Image 1 (cartoon, rainbow, N blue to C red):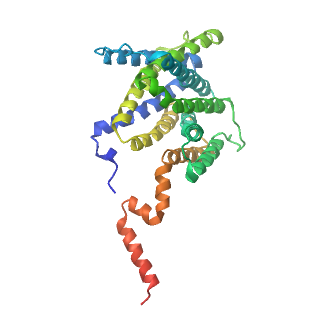
Image 2: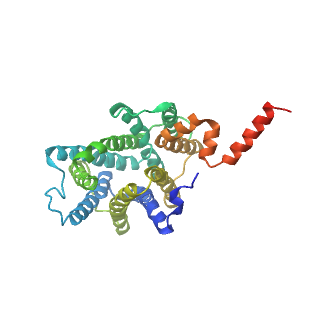
Length: 338
């Protein structure tokens, strides 16, 4: 079996492919640190609005030579309604819940909970798109829920689903619903346009809520945290999404999507290094189980086919044909002793 195409890319291209997940993971740490001087909804606004404006400006520049009147906005009322719904779910709810959850969970733990959303995506896809889960998918889903339960355990071993964990799970569910909505949104709007507009429109309810419920949003922000939030918006949103969509359209999608596991790894690493975050052993076990289950959910059809091939088929898929031949020889000798 040929090795993954990812290993044959130039080093600079491989680094660029990893960049979105590095940027997302590091942005979680920057946002968590800035919460000591500002409010959650204000952070969510800064994560969405500047990035959305940049994405729309890029799309407008990209379509400057196009004669189509819809070069920079969705097509018709139906297009606007889908983008607005997408903005409320994947913009307002996702970023709002995420920022609220960061107050009480660490950046690393929060990132793991957010990245559990493929479990909910797979479940909703079976309902709305009649996608088949299969026995491996259902097993992974159940174990994934068990892993999330371990993450919610306190140091004394009791289940403690505090407000932070609940906010993060709500953010994960919002992102999952947005993911399920995306195929419908793509039917009526360009994906880049939808990304830009959903950031801008999704920030508007957050601006209203922040004005009504929060005070002193920026008065105590230091220069270093202003730079950090600018990084989270420009690099952690606009550039990260641009690189992600580019490589998703250019590379093998299955191989590229497997790199999403780097986001919580980067967040856990940077959270531990710069914020002094730590997890209990049971929580680390929950992190490991959850990430493995998310991987299996994303690749369930591929592994289901391999399991149907039996152990010989699995070894052949892994490029171990010589081991298959050796074991087959042993079986023949065992069956014919003379």
